[in-house]
Image 1 (cartoon, one colour):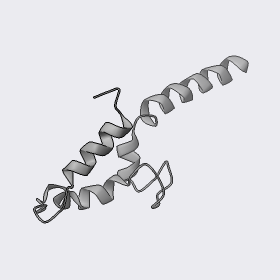
Image 2 (image 1 turned 30 degrees about the vertical axis):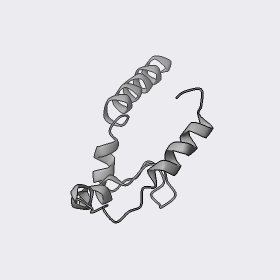
Image 3 (image 1 turned 180 degrees about the vertical axis):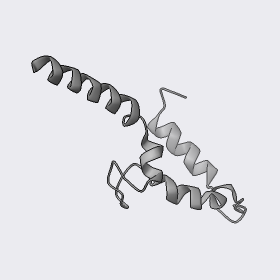
Length: 84
């Protein structure tokens, strides 16, 4: 009986390693979230990202944005003088 249990456990272990682990995309597409699926999760919902892919490729006009390059350069020089 112990031999059968050991063989069954070994088989289950190998099957779970092959078909469950590393299959994040598969389970995500099935609607099964392995991690929390909320705003505070550090791992995004891939289905939501795929729906919004166009917004990532859209060009945004930044000409009216004040980059304030002199102040940023001074800040970097003050904080990291040994690197520059």
